[in-house]
Structures are given as structure tokens and as C-alpha cells.
Length: 298
Figure 1: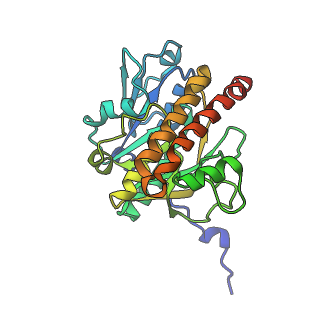
Figure 2: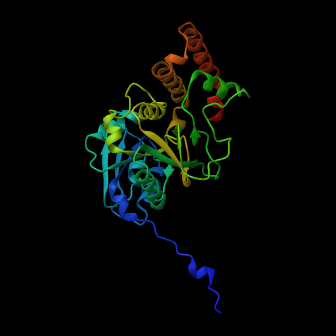
Figure 3: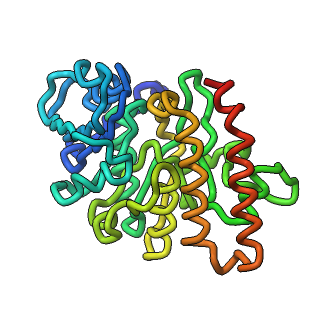
């Protein structure tokens, strides 16, 4: 009697890298230094043509542009003014011809095999408009915001004061799901979208100065009948804050402006009119308190 070798019975199916031809990656760059080149090299793997990559440079004045690799399928556009993140993506929206759009920060590293998994998830779930993986810092720790809920007044309070009665926006303190699942929100640092869904929504809301445009997009996807999914097996590295650390106070104030716009846009039914002046005052007091903290961290 012959016993089968269990090692011989295991077959590993290679990822279908051909699906990468269905994706255009859009990278909005502003003074990202060598990270921009690293991001593109990771996406391209060994220099393949696919996925297509479009870099929109928001009038950088560093050397990030000089570090770009010479690879097929790479389109570069330098702007004379800084449009910001959301408007920078919208700038190329009408020119996108692929089925999927990958919006990825220049300080993110996603390999082709991980992107293939995200494509397969959208193929398996036609009701999904957006998918992402888990975001890790360069030390291998899951970043805050990698898994999260959409903001609301109660969740914001839980986030700030760490109330035990409920969860805030960030969910990374909870165990990660074992399998891919529908969620309220994922990190905006790396998002794979159906181009049709993104275009039907008109792209990002240009009224968000910086930050919260990603959560606004996910809220609008849900409102339009699309779902958002998380694939926890896909790991994405994110240095974080490469561009924003050059102007931390401005970025911090824009975060507060973005939150105020988000709450006014999406949370009116959960937000009594009488409380809004108190929220406005508390929001900007928090911003002022954070100024020395932000400067110290810098």
C-alpha cells in the first residue's frame, strides 16, 4: 500500500496577473521624496506594463519627480498649482479608460499579487464599489484607520474621550476578521474602486480641503447602494504623513475643517440643531489645543 505524500498534493495557484490590465493606479504626489518611486516600483513588480500608473504632481518642489523609474505604462503630469488630493484625482477622472481605479498614496507599498486579490474580491462581489486591505506601518503594526466606521457625533465623542460605552471611528483595537467582509469604511491611503461607481458619484467632493474626502466618498457609495469591503489577507505598507509633516499645523486644521463639513453633510439627522454651535466651538478648541502637540511631534 502506497501512502500519498501530502506535500505533493498541495498545489498553489499563481495569481492571475493578467487582471492588472483592468486597473489604472492614480498617485497624487506632493513632495514625497523617494517614496513616490518606491510606490511605483512596488506596484509594477518587475517593470511590467500593467497596472497602468498615472502620477499627478501637485507642484512639488522636492526631488520626488527625479526618482521616478523608467517603466512602460507610466503617465506623468505636473501641475502648476497644488489642487489637493481629491481635486487631483478628479483632474484625471474623465481620462480613465480601465474598469478599476486604484487610488494610492505615494508613501504606500502594494505589490501586484495583493492588487490581484482586491480585483478578485470586486469580481466576486458585484455589489461592492470599493475594496481595500489592511494598512500597516513600516514596523509591521496595523495603523489606526486601517479598519474603521463612518463618523457620527457619538462615535466622534467615543473616539476623543475613549468612552467605554461604545466604539469610536477606529476599530483596529478589535480583532481583525479572518475573511473578507463588508465594512462601513476602510483606509483612504489605498482604495480600489469601480471606475463607473466613482464616476457616477462625480469623484471626490472638491469642497473637502484635505482629509475626510475618503470617508465622504464611502458614505456616498453606501447611500447609492454600493458596499465597501475589506480583504484582511492583503497587507499594504504605509509610511504615513510623508507630505503632511512638512506643514503639520495646516494639515491638522484642514482635518478639523473636513470633519465639520462631513458632519454637516452626513449627520444632520443625528445632530440636534441646538448642539451645533457647541460642536463648532469644541471642534476648534480641540484644534487649538492640538497645535503644540503637533509641533512637538514634528
